[in-house]
Length: 226
Image 1: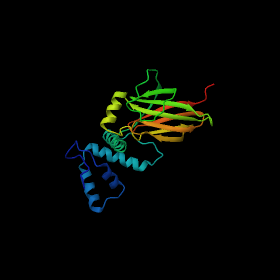
Image 2 (image 1 turned 30 degrees about the horizontal axis):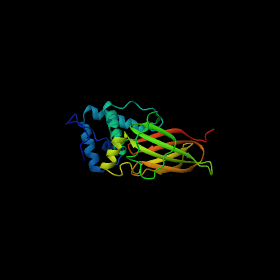
Image 3 (image 1 turned 180 degrees about the vertical axis):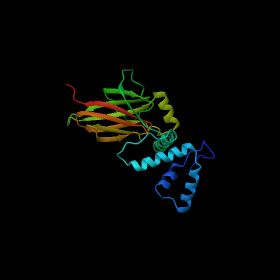
Image 4 (image 1 turned 45 degrees about the vertical axis):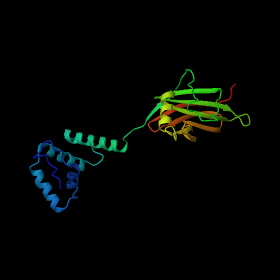
């Protein structure tokens, strides 16, 4: 069993799990005796930790607890931080896109053959990602078709990335939400293109999930012109 005390090495962190097992009676007879003997000569920090753990065990869930020793407090913070880092090594950031007013980028380098361009075009940007949307109203049922394209940084960089690694923009998930509930979804092709067909009129939120950042486009209104 690892020595949980700091009697020989004052910089050594106590084995909190072993101390808890000892207090709860989960150690076998040999390890329990070794722990008791070690604690007789333990340093001040370990003694304070044992005292606090005993108070914690007796207090239960309702009674207020005393502030833990500084060393025990720091150990707990470190353990939780390491656990969080292991579970979420690369936390995804969500950014709200803004409607930008600027000249249209040249799309010929990245648009696939047969992609349709509309006159009702909106361009949104956030976190180095541009999302271009083309709306078309359907005469037959009043719904809307939508063609979109995702660009990373600028056209030049996206073109270079696509040429160097085909499929870089492939598989980005694009969600349409209505009242915070998923209505439908699409995925981009290797050019970053996606589409939705026959979307009923209404207000939607679009969420573009790139894997490194989530781009939110709020209050996206599908509405016939007055």
